[in-house]
Picture 1 (cartoon, rainbow, N blue to C red):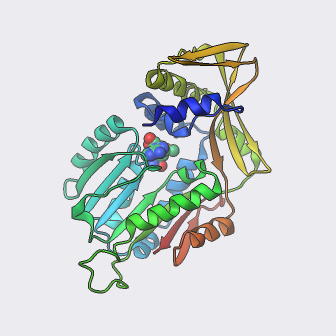
Picture 2: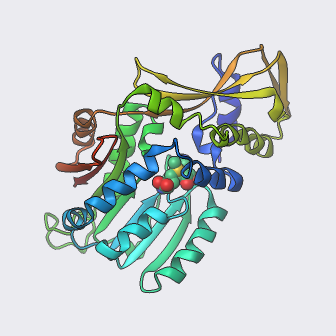
Length: 315
Ligand SMILES: C[S@@+](CC[C@H](N)C(=O)[O-])C[C@H]1O[C@@H](n2cnc3c(N)ncnc32)[C@H](O)[C@@H]1O
């Protein structure tokens, strides 16, 4: 990982750290706990969409050689797809490599007939798929509304990248590039809703999201040898209506200085480090983004409250 980008973010006038740094082994476990919080509706809503529309989703996906799980985490959502989709191979990609490896140990026991591989990688960097998968019909799976962590223009760039990962029409062995072997992207997207519901989801009563946010500083200390003291920092999460996004910040509880080898940053009391955006979309806006990314067509399913949508976009 590029630690200079962490330092650049800390030295920015409005300090920021990329949300990908939430996920060391502790951060991945804290995220699992967040999904169990009663206020955190996204995981339950997405699972309810996937289970209510299981057969329709499986029909839309068609026959799948390889399911590529992007930011797989504990891999549970892919596991829930397996009975109806039945891929031959499963490739789980995540930046939190040790956590992913242990999740795959459990997955291999539960689904011995599926060939499984783990790839510890940063989705924002170049992803190279195993050569053996080149000619497979591939479906990319990006659940959890992780796409919401990116500004809309960056999100379209990432969607283009996922389209290229699933597209085997340029493989030389393909005699008919326009054939049905072209794959697609199954993606979960959180929708705009009452801001009280949004606010509660990122400010759970038990303080697990606050712990998840602060744990990022422990991870940063280990990466750049900085001296963040967690008790100096408070959790803040609010809905920015104008930009249709939840923002998470860590704010300094007093005037303080953070140092690392070769550098430092002064923070005034109340000054913040921006740690995450989570954009909330309208269905139409996200459809347009899929089209802008070059997908030929898309369909979607929602839960009964229309809080969350799952899209399948074809190449
Ligand atoms: C919000 S969690 C979702 C986990 C799981 N897919 C789910 O839906 O419950 C985001 C996941 O993406 C991973 N992740 C975050 N940024 C990443 C990046 N830049 N590259 C690869 N994985 C990333 C995290 O480690 C984490 O497992």
